[in-house]
Length: 86
Image (cartoon, rainbow, N blue to C red; front, side, top):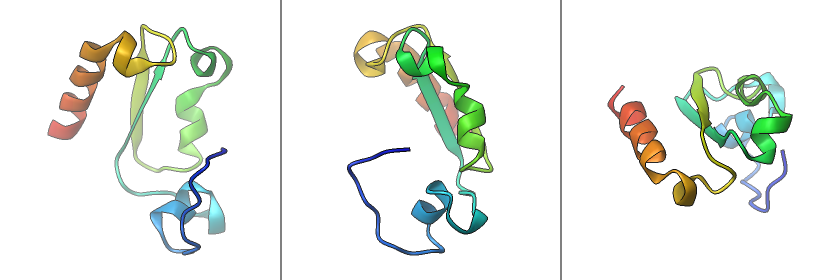
């Protein structure tokens, strides 16, 4: 996982868990969404990838490319509304 954001070095933090440090997994619920037509959706098993970093994840692909908010705003809104209600 690459990112331009570098979180503080805190081995017990959420960021440490997401970075896979110390065998930790994030415990917070995580919604994982990706565009089915995008590169990520075509090349990776996205949920399986995130299971390495988060113990409580759920998600699915949306029928769009990489720019989910522009290409499927209603699908994104529906997913977020459902996730935040649960």
